Length: 385
Image (cartoon, rainbow, N blue to C red):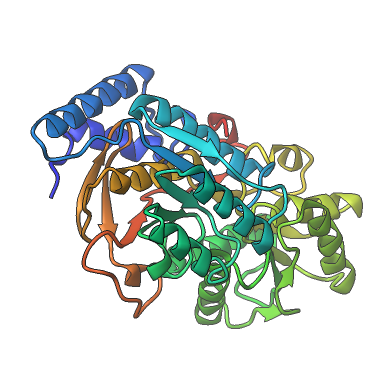
């Protein structure tokens, strides 16, 4: 549908998506500031050309309510920083609207505030897979475009979802990070490994899907592993994540691996281990979180590796697609959209995230981020979010 950007921009995008800092990438290459500036200029020129020819309706002047699961969390603050950065270049307003509590009640109130404010669009990371559907449909009925990012709702309660990746990618990634760390401290992953999962709650669609996919991967590749407990939930509460983290360790003193597929649970679990005088030589802890949220535990020897994706780009894309549709543009699953300053991104059907899920004929589907990164002491300084 849309014209692809040049090879220079595409190459720059692949390198830049692995980290918010310019130098960070997993392939050993580095994108220079000059190259990024040239790519950004070319993207803007391409967008202007398309808009002038009538291919794309301008998003300039649109207002997007950007709603995180909770404020104060390093992941969501970094996502907002990225959204604000790109919003200036795109000429849109991003209103960061959220609560310090990751609860359905609080998010419903924030959505209502966005409706009352008369925003053009909402881009939200949902705390629950279905509990926000009715309120978001109310927003749609009021003429507000709804998109999700990071954590989804029902497909008929939003237009596009900007996802960090499929469960089949992220679940095994979490396990593989644990496997590498186990090997490095002399534990054979082919033998019996006692492990547990610690994340926010089962109702959070993305995190739970990673758990399910990770469990499937473990059963296929590491059949001797033993889950010592059902998943531990800390409800994305920073204090509770430490308390639950301590319970994991108290209940299972011989546990080998704890997988935290949640950016609040991971630092909380590491703090719990530190409180008990444990290091990465005693128990392997891994999961998803920003570099800035974990470097203190890396330096203290509590963990050796964890992962994430470019949450700044993800947040920005959530806002872009919301504004793009609010401007009257149309998307069909399978289209490639040129996003100024970021590059060409592909849209796919909803079934790419959840098998069997239907996709509306237009303005419904998923955008998948193409890259993720594993942080270690060797590369963590290359990232600034």
